[in-house]
Each structure stands twice: as structure tokens, then as C-alpha cells.
Length: 101
Image 1 (cartoon, one colour):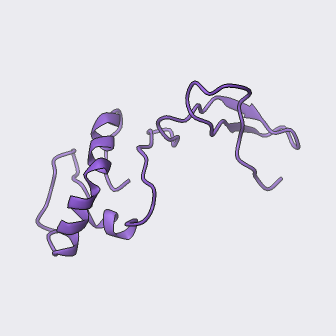
Image 2 (cartoon, rainbow, N blue to C red):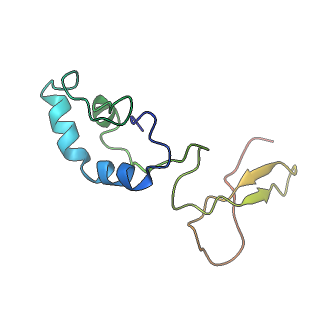
């Protein structure tokens, strides 16, 4: 997400995403190289410009989005083990994204 070494910092990542407009403005004004928010290696504010109209969500060190169920689901077609993409605490069975198999 443009935040390096932010594992286990879910709340911090969510707060930074909530303030993304300010980071976009700073990057647009050319302050990217001068800004270093101490998260071990810093924050790449140009990331927010590159992904200006994208939905951003915090992601874990294991590659899943916080707020997703992420339980294992076996593909009905090939048996590949995938992860549930529904929200945490969803009703009904888990669902994985489609894949090419």
C-alpha cells in the first residue's frame, strides 16, 4: 500500500487511507521526497497519486485484506485451495474468487 514494514499496524494503515486526500495534495505539490513518516522505512505518498481513484484497503503481511473472511475454500472445479473473499462474519457459506483452472 505504499507503507513499507507496516505489518501488524492495521489501524495505522486505515487511518492513513482515511487521510489519503492530504497525501495526494502533498505529492501533487512536489513534497514526496521531503516527507518521511517514520514507519521504519517511510511512507511513499506518490503511491496515493498513482492509485488516486482506486479503492484502498489495509492488507496483511499474508496478502489478505483486513475485513475479509479469508477462510480456506476448496474450488468446486479443480479442488484448489483458495481463500474466502466475503466480509468477516458473513452469513452463509464462504466464497472464493474465480480462477483459471
